[in-house]
Length: 318
Ligand code: NAD
Ligand code: UDP
Image (tube, rainbow, N blue to C red; front, side, top):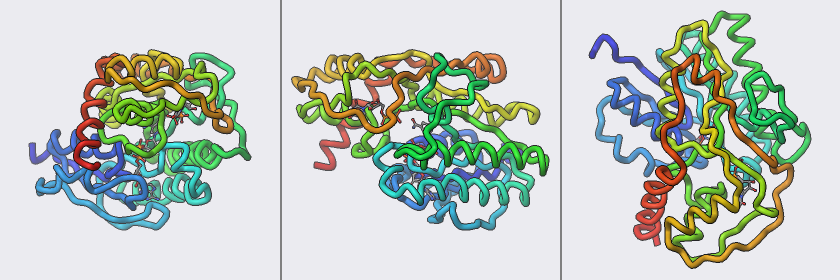
C-alpha cells in the first residue's frame, strides 16, 4: 500500500464534488491536499476527514501561483452554479483561466498528471443532441453565462496546449449536471432548489415553461469516472463526457421530487434565466469505450440520499 500512496492535490476540494473526491482518494490510501478559497465550499464538507493524518486543507486561491510537490492534480476550483458564478463574473473567468495556468505550471514543474473539471457548458445551447465530444458547441461569448462557459473553454485550450507544447499528461472531463449530498442548499441549482423548497413546503420555482431538459448524474457515479480517467493510459486525454444520459424536463424533475418527499408544494413559473440551454444529454460512447464506465444510479435512487441529506441539513441548521 505504501508504495502505491500518491500525493494528490484536489483544488476546490471543500466543494460539493471535491469533498466526495477527497474522501474517495483517502479511502484508496493516498495523501490528499484539499485546496480551497471557501467561496462556495465549506469546511463542514470535509470536517469528517480532518482527523485523517493523510488529509490536509490549504486555504489558497488558484488565481495565485502555488509551490508544493504533488503526483496528481484534480483541478475542480470554480463556482459551478449560475447564480454563484455570475455573482463575480470577472473572478469566475480568472479562476478558470489563471487557475488553469497556475495548476498546469505546477503540474509541469512536478511532472504531475492533471485532470480538468470541464463542463457540458462548453457546448452552450447545443444544436446537436445528444452531445458528442466532437461537437464544438454553440456558446454566446458575451452573455451572462460566458464568464463560466468561455473560461472553461479557454482552460481546455490551455490544457491541450500544455499537452502538445510541454508533453504534459492531461485529462479533461466534461461534466454534465451532477447532484447529491453536500450540494450547497442555497446555490440556486435546480436539484437543491427543488428539494429544499419541497421539504419546506414552499413553492417550487420552475423557470420558463419547465420543458427544458437536463441529464442528472449521481455524485458517486461521477467520482468513479474521475478516478478511472486519472488512471487511464497516458495517451488518453479526453475530452470525455461524464454524465448520466437519462434526460428529464424540469417539470418531470419537480414531479419526482414532490413524489419522493410527499410534499404539498405547488409549482410556480419564474422567468427563464439568460441563455438557459434548452436541452442537454451526454453521448457517453467514448466513456464506455475508453474507461469502461457508465453511470449505475437512476434518478430516483440518487434523489433519495440527496433528499435525506437536505432533510437532515435543514433540521440541524434551522
Ligand atoms: P462547488 O461550488 O461546490 O465547488 C467549487 C469549489 O471551488 C468550492 O469549494 C469553492 O470554494 C472553490 N473555489 C472557487 N473558486 C476558487 C478559487 N479561485 N480558488 C480556490 N478555490 C476556489 O461546485 P461543484 O459542483 O463541486 O463543482 C466542482 C467543479 O466541477 C467546478 O469546476 C465545476 O465547474 C465543475 N462542474 C460541476 C458540475 C456539477 O453539476 N456539479 C457540472 C459541470 C462542471
Ligand atoms: N431551474 C429551475 N428552477 C430553479 C433552478 C433552476 O427551473 O429553481 C432550471 C434552470 O432554468 C435550468 C435547469 O433548471 O433550465 C438547470 O439549472 P441549474 O442551474 O441546476 O444548472 P445549469 O443551467 O447550469 O444546467
